[in-house]
Image 1 (cartoon, rainbow, N blue to C red):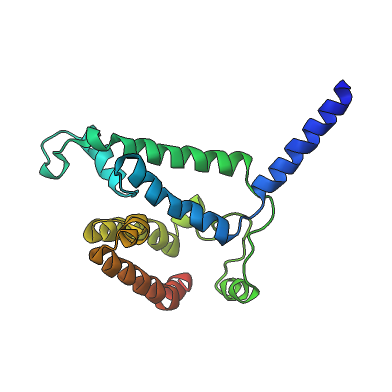
Image 2 (spheres, helix red, strand yellow):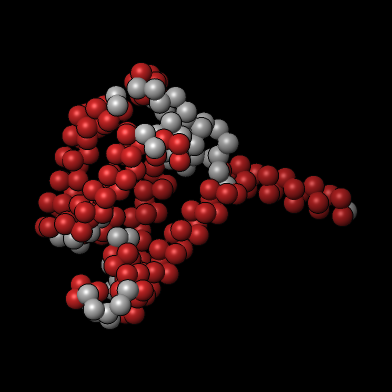
Length: 202
């Protein structure tokens, strides 16, 4: 009886892990992300966004002499818990629930990347580009340091990132969010077709 229970429990957890670690299709992940908007609004009239949490962290940690950080950040402390939950969830998923299979990439994309000396597709990001060793190269520096700065600058300039504008702002029919999202898409297309091939050729 005890052995039968252990076998059933083992089979249940094996099936559960297979279900959790499989690549989830877009029609599952997309609606789950979208549902955060009405849930936050219904629970406390909160707005979804990630980049604003950096301002709250700076306001909490930096001296109060900078006008940009002089506001009651404690009213937005829930956002820090939200971002902390996203971080912990990502850490748990990456450590315990990661899929051992290679990332599924279209053959044409894989062939195009291989022509640019990007051949490692074991993880979510190619180690050929994003690793400590590649940071010392020109293209690694541009991708990680310059790219990170430009993402932060653009986010501040647009008054929010893709999650705040494309997910939350468009759901609220905000005109600035539509403009920002269109600009994000144009910038993405230009970078994909013009900027990235040049950087990868360095």
